[in-house]
Amino acid sequence: MPTSGKPPLIKVTNLDVIFGDGENTVHAVQSVNFSVAEGETFGLVGESGSGKSTVLRALSGLNADWSGTIEIAGVAQGKHRDKAFYKTVQMVFQDPYGSLHPRHTVDSVLSEPCTIHGIDDAERRQYEILTEVGLGPSFRFRYPHQLSGGQRQRVAVARALMLEPRIVLLDEPTSALDVSVQAEILNLLQRLKREHGLTFILVSHDLAVIAHMCDRLAVMNAGRIVEEMTVEQLRSSTPEHPYTRQLLRASTGYDRAAAETFERFD
Image (cartoon, rainbow, N blue to C red; front, top):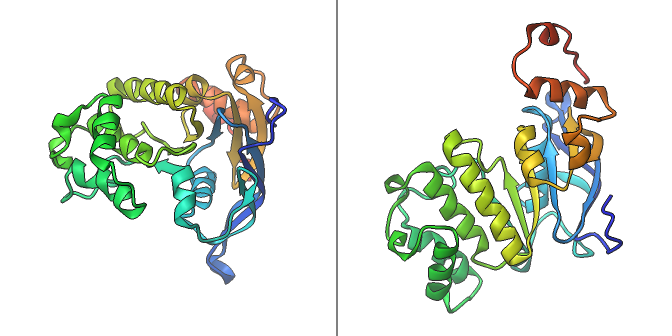
């Protein structure tokens, strides 16, 4: 739980997500609870299929098939969000090419949220945001195929910031990028968080990324949170749950002896 003493900016209670029905039912997220203080970076970590991205999609309003309670700034959210929600909460996706329309220029990508929300000074905002993310106005009329992976992700970050949100949800924001570019994007996100007073929820399978970015984290396995801890506990390798200890061992690289002792925690 946050230790600031302030009411949480984000509070998730008994979140469940179920896909399919009958024999095809998948209980993707089960009784997930956590809260995030304003200005905090909270991580959701776990292997592929653990449910962490599904939690983010429920939070963002992209998936309406959930039950439980999601509160943003003390306001309970319904299954379908209004435009005001998206001025508070924005998301950056994993694939920086797939999240940008291939036939839309950067100018079009960044103008769209302003048009939807009736913001008049879109051009000024574009200049400011493109400069802040390290691209500059000269990139305005380029198409996604004319950009590198890192540049595309900078555009995606710029788009998320166009509406001046308080919360940014980050779904594996560097996993599709070359290793040489990943640190640049993470450092960019850290700087923007400080400058804009943002609150982050970061989903990653990479414990090194979580340790670099987060204040606290929740470890997910098979749709459940098995442990919540501070990043100091992560760095000192003092988790309590055996699944978390197994994740830590796996993050150090392939070890045949360790691999042979790995357990399933379903």
